[in-house]
Image (cartoon, rainbow, N blue to C red; front, side, top):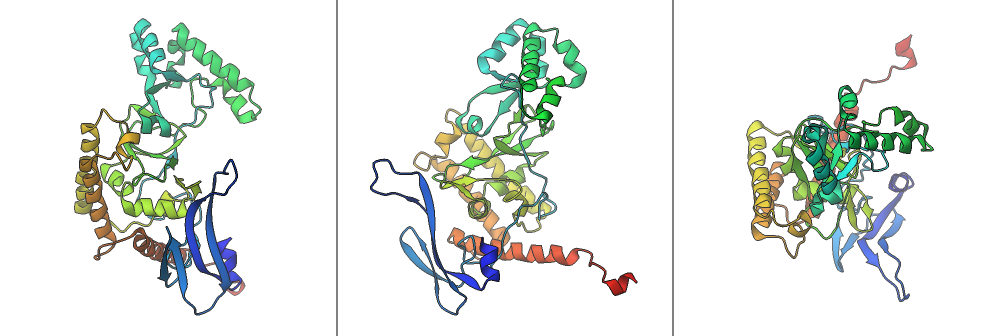
Length: 366
C-alpha cells in the first residue's frame, strides 16, 4: 500500500514497530500488529516508537525506517549483479516416498551397501536447525534400471509413481513417469549455503549453514550453490539480518526469508579479493566454533539465553567487519544500518534504470 500513499500526498507521521497484540479474552488471538499514523505531507516532526521508546526521525518510509521513501520489489536476479544466484531448495512432490529416515537408510544399506551411491543427505530448515538426520534417493536417469534391481528401491519408486498419478495437478501426474526425480531439482554437486525460509525473531542471528555436495537442500529452505565461505560470512552479518527483517515480511514476528525479495535486493558494495579473504577467515571461524559445540543443535546454539560466548564473539567479529565495508563510522543500531542500506538500494535502482536503453520516440523511429 505504501507506494500509493506517497503518490496521494500522504505520509507516515508516526509509527510503532511490530508487537504481539493481546486482549482480555480467554484465548488470545496470535496477532502481530504495527501502528501507523498517516497524515498529509507536511513539515512536522516524525516519530518512531520501539519497545516503548520514542525517537524523532527525519523520515519514516514504508518499512518504518528512517530512510528514503523506497519500495523494494520482487526481482529474479540480484541487484548486486556479481552475487551468485539463490534458489528455493529441491521439491520432491513424492508423497514422502523419496525420503528416508535414518533407520530406513541403515536397513537399506545393510542389505545392499552398493545402493549408497543413490542416497544423499536431505535437509530442510527444521532438520538443519534441530540436527534431524534424514536422507533421500537421488538416482540419475541412467541408473534407474540398475537401481530397480533392489526390491526396496523399486517399491519406493513405484509408490512415487502411484502417488503422483493421483494428483489433481497435471504437471505432477506427468512426472509419474520419472519417479526417480524430484519434481523441482535445484541441487548441484557443489558446496552450498542453506538459508531457512522462516526463523524465530528471538534469535539474534538467522541460523544459516554451509554444506557440502553430499546434501540436498529441501524446499523449506533457500539454497545458494557453488557458494564460497565469504558469502556465508556476509549473510550471517547483522547488516544482512537487519535487511531481511525490514523487507522480508514477518510470520507473526518471525523472520521470513525469500530470495526474490530479500537476497536479490540486498545492496552490497564491491568487494576486493583481500576483503573476501578476510570475510572467509571470519566465516570459517564461526563454522569452527559451531563444530566445537557439535553436541548442541543450532536451535540451542542460537538461543540468545544459551549462545556460547565464543560463538557470540565470532559473530560479533563478522558484524564489525561487514559494518566497516559499508561505512567508516561504527553503527550503533539496526536503524542506522537500514538507513544506509535503503540509501544504497535507491542509488543502485537509479543506476540500473539509467543503464537501460532509452525507448525511441515516434520521431526517432521515423
